[in-house]
Length: 304
Image 1: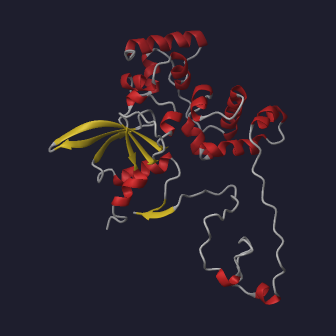
Image 2: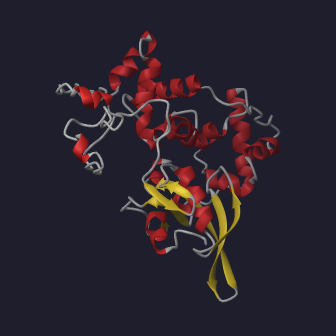
Image 3: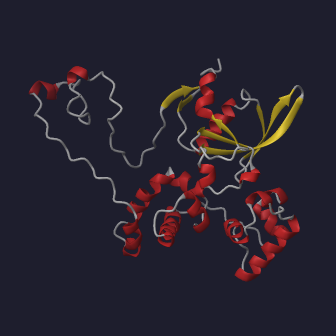
């Protein structure tokens, strides 16, 4: 195993990269080109700007919201370089922005191709990229139904028009079979399955939901949170290991455990993956998995 780069080595690497580029490197550029892990950097410096300042470089002060156009154009250029839709790991290596930035803006990673398709539709400069995307799902053709009776048209209790034809007025109160799927209405938020756990009405659908839920149950799971940050690892906490004895642990939040691998995190900088769903069977054995979807089943649904 290679020794972790020390503080001076990181500073020398920063200065050398800045000389070659004629400007201070971004955090992503530095991590991808220097092969120094993010964990090594945050162990030596409290922030990226602090590392730049220690190297005698101008701090990164851009603090404005990125435009959707800028994010989507970078994603499209990554598809072009990758010759196909990139995995999270590929985008981490080829793209300019953070995976969380993309997912926070456009939803799950699997939804980004459709968002990009709408953005690039009719723009000739993106024709080659659109050709690399899978064809959009075909919309079901409308079924021909029987004309409703006049008294049905006048009734306020008529079955909604969007229900499949077999759901008639006589069974309108029946629950829908699991195979029924309705089209997505664009521009509206989506929610997880209803669960009504202590005021959280729906299951998490992203990493932010996992962070919120963990904060609600951390004490009952035996954790005290020391700090939360945007860099890797996400959280520093302590947990009791014996009577009157506690130990420090590093946690990384993920919606699904396998996202840890897709985000390109080093396995040496984390002790516990806190996730909603564990779906990484080849997870390194030294990484503990805290699967909240299973754990909350043993907890009371109300604080009362």
